[in-house]
Image (cartoon, rainbow, N blue to C red; front, side, top):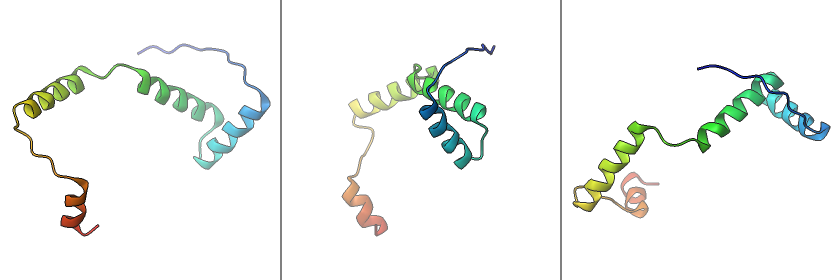
Amino acid sequence: MGKTKKLIELDDKAIKALEKQAKLEKRSLKNYMEWLLEDTAQRYSEPSEEYKAMMDDMLERMKNDEINFISVEEVREKYGL
């Protein structure tokens, strides 16, 4: 996949906040901002074809009563949580 350079302008307060977070994550500011933007873009993107197929299969299995669900309370009781 190709890469594109973009020039962005942020106020000093935003840059300081991002620098602080980047240091906490042991990243450079540039690396942190690139990661943050790519992560956000990924969350906004459409699900993969594999994910869609998996969800379609799960919905079909639910419709046909082929999946058994248990409540959170049952899980807690079973595992002592």
